[in-house]
Length: 561
Ligand code: G1P
Ligand code: ZN
Image 1 (cartoon, helix red, strand yellow):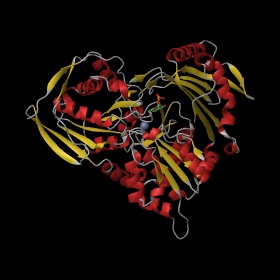
Image 2 (tube, protein in one colour):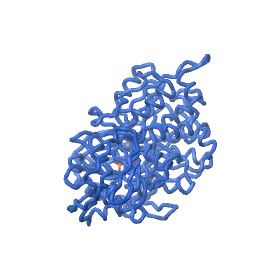
Image 3 (cartoon, helix red, strand yellow):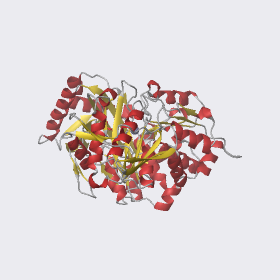
Image 4 (cartoon, helix red, strand yellow):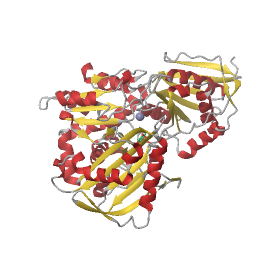
């Protein structure tokens, strides 16, 4: 029989989860007791429900995942958890964790990921708690976890427990007279089963391989050395019978092979170049933990995530899952381009706007109000789980293309002709100095909240814009009435064009300023326009108004989407 012990610890400051869990440098997590403290705080936050519970554990394969899994096993065993379900080698994509929590009705799950942040001994790690609905813990729970970390005096652990997580197996132990079971499962099985229930794999297969009338549809899929490797191998190679050469970077690596595993035009340039120069009709890339996606068409025609959401919304009825469930509602995060709003209006479907972060969609889904949602940050998903889901988005696109029989570009052009076009761009200024970034935001907030700013007219480019709303965005959840404040500075003009400034909540150090611009154009020739040219005057105006260059010393953004 194994015995648990209590270990004295010291409080670490700053264990406050951000937009998506606690994210810090690996070196920070490696400090004595640091990871243990946070895990103990997560377990303590579960109160009476913890004893006898089942939890899911898995991560994106980055450096330190395996160490963290072993620590979680030891700590869970000592805290009367009855069972852990763990992905083989600690590998579970974020969407897979959500799937497994829901399927086996567990109390929750611990996701070991820093998402799209680089990995390796000198890069980032993260721990996130997901609740029994499969979704990221809402603010009241993450706040509780944080509170607990500030007073923690000790944690409980079974020092002698070691489980071989490389083998699929179920093993049971007697710990302090109670049974404790660890179930190491295949990382892909449950997720694959879910995807097969949602989509018609037969029609996707026909699209990919062609038939007597249509040529094969050539795709290239890049896992960016992240967690989706085993998932795309099973789905696209084994099930949909694509050749190996269609899958790139499909082995999860602890340092993502040095990549910054974020599927955007800058960090996924390898995919963009390959599609630009190759015979491909379609390309997709995913981030480190598999919840983000980038979709591009022939010659690297880029689909902005805001447009991707709108196109999926307009065609959702082509996917078997939604034929069964119906379309309950649509949603986007506040800074996301408002293209989906036009679809919702035309189809008379309820639309929700929520703050940045997937956790805000969960309540709406649980209440049966929401089917499809997305964020401009390459996140798209539905109520099949409670996380965004990169591979799901790719399969959704392929399903729709199989039915429509059109190219990505033609689908977009037709969409814009029907609904008008929202031009959207995001400028990221990564790793700025925290103090000066905060000052910039403070000064801008004061400026836009001065009496007279609303109603003011500005000549920007060759258009005149009148300010309709200028505020610091706050949100009241329609289901539980919880309130989120300080969610980004908004300047909304009477024509619907929006300028938004936000500070990132996912960085592990310094500050990242995000500037979002969204502007609607219903001119029939809007489909021919180039986004960056179209939005340049609004970008320039926003930068001058905020004095961003003055505050941060940055002349150019790090990433433009
Ligand atoms: C970023 C994105 C946000 C997304 C989050 C987690 O958060 O902007 O949309 O939900 O990553 O993937 P941020 O760094 O802006 O706080
Ligand atoms: Zn992610």
